[in-house]
Image (cartoon, rainbow, N blue to C red; front, side, top):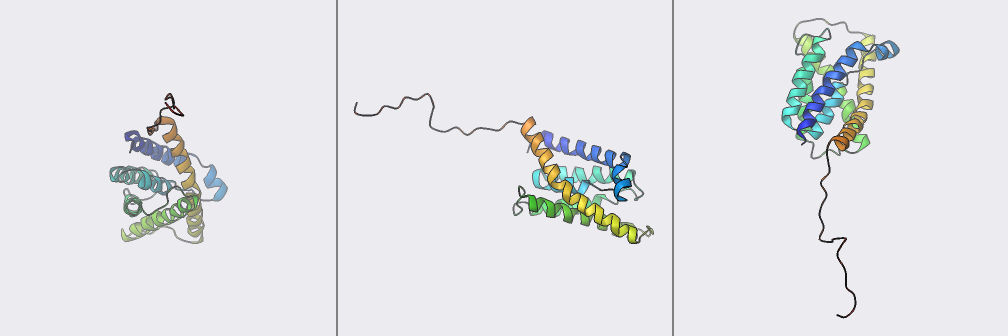
Length: 183
């Protein structure tokens, strides 16, 4: 694992939360705001270690909750649960397949808001629920499913640009002279 990868993921999480709260274009166009942290958690769970997952769930959850109407810390637990579930089974997941990325993004984007809603309801608060909530849930889930492969491409570009690939050395040297025939 590249040590800068964790820092890059946390900076990206901060920027995503900032853009979600300040850029209102998607909210005005679709009537709902897309949460991209579950998609980022899918990437972090498949690419980094447990420490990065804990940091992303903690800091990302606090950043989202501080800029939303949620009680502080409600989003941390669902994000961590998603990250931990994917992390524990990541050796079985085909992380480079587009279909797997989309499905994981859809599932993660569905689990996080439902988990946060259950925690808000268990705290005794009464959020506004109705048909608009269903539309917001659908937009959030589909947006997270679409964003997950895009985040994989973005971080693949960063990985190719900011790190070097080790070359495997073979026993064949191109400057070696091969003698043929009898000597």
